[in-house]
Amino acid sequence: MNSMQEVKIAKATINVGVGEAGEKLARAEKLLISITDQKPIRTYSKVTNPEFGIRKGQPIACKVTLRDEKANEAIQLILNGIGNNLSSRQFDRNGNVSFGIEEHIDIPGMRYDPDIGIFGMNISVTFEKPGYRIKKRKIQRKKIPQKHQVTPEETQAFMQEKFQVKIS
Image (cartoon, rainbow, N blue to C red):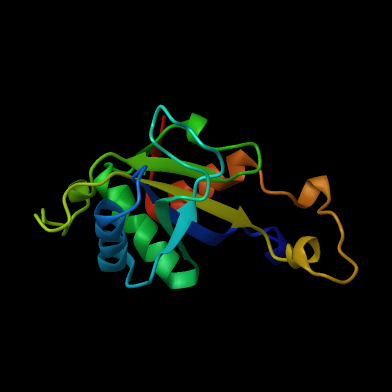
C-alpha cells in the first residue's frame, strides 16, 4: 500500500458537558485530568437559553484534545468501556467517528469517587492521511483532492484492525 494512503489518527477529543458552571464543572475537569493526565479547557455557551438557565458566555463544559500515543491509549480505554462495539452510523462522511459513554465508571480501572460523582462523555476521533497539512497551512493553502480524502470504509477498517472494534 502507498504510504500516502495510510489512515492515521490526527486527534481525539474527549468532551464532558455538564450544562452549568461552578462545582460540577470543576469535578468534571478533575475527572478528565485523572483519565488523560492533561489539563482540560472550558467551553462556553454560544447562546442564551432561559429554559435551561444558561447565559451566553457561561462555561458549560470542558474538553481535552489528545494526539499521538495518548490518543491511542484513551481511545482503547474508552472502547473497552463500551465493549468494543460501534455502529456504522457513528462514522461521518469524512471518515471521522464519534461515540459516547454514559458513565465514566464503565471504563475499566475507573472507580466511583464520591468527590467527583458520575459523568458521561463524548469522544470524537479525527482521522487523516499524510499531506493534510496543505489544508491547514497559512501560505498557499490548498484543498485536499477527493481521492486523498478519508472515507468511512477506510476508517472502519482501521478501527477494526487497530482496536479490534465490532461494527454493526
